[in-house]
Image 1: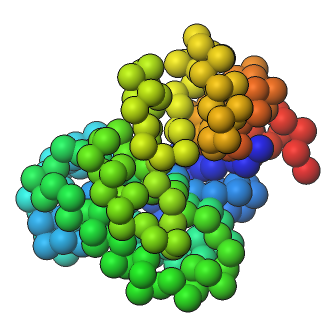
Image 2 (image 1 turned 30 degrees about the horizontal axis):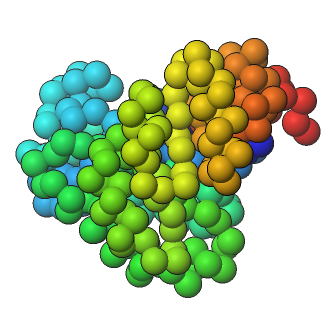
Image 3 (image 1 turned 90 degrees about the horizontal axis):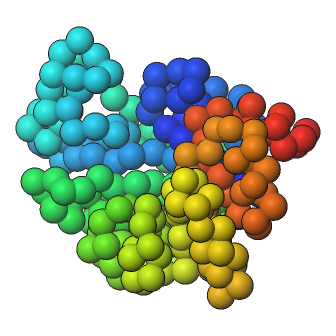
Length: 231
């Protein structure tokens, strides 16, 4: 079972930051997860919230702020930088586009363009990239764009999404899975890939391993490895 660092080693470092992703690599995470948003001038950054209020002392709306201003005031990590870090260190990527946003599906299209530009390096590194979202439309968009460069998947926190997922990649909430373990069993039986978020407790990690999850997404990659007895 793979260990994927949720916004980097976000339990110990500022989420989505360069330091969090570098720490995740040092902690032997198998992959890196990030949230993607577009700035006003269409730069792709790793940022979960729609504004900077929670993670800084100022409040800037990402979609209405140019990258240079964000760089000067909150210094977000650019997706291009994360992609290079993942390629150089041979780490899988789980990339989540956030919706709804004023720019609609532009984020998926620009991400696709960036991945295509780096396709030779991606293929040479051997990493897997999975584009996920809570948005069914974004998932369908990723599915139509992906070709053979990356895969698409749906984030699932309710039974309806588990039923309508148009892909074979299921990123399932840990609480939903614990309440309905047969959901995970069914996904695996039907040949799907099961990724579980956000898994931090030792008992939950072992539950995911027992049920046959392909990967867990965690805030604490080093602790997860230790809890599972991975070297």
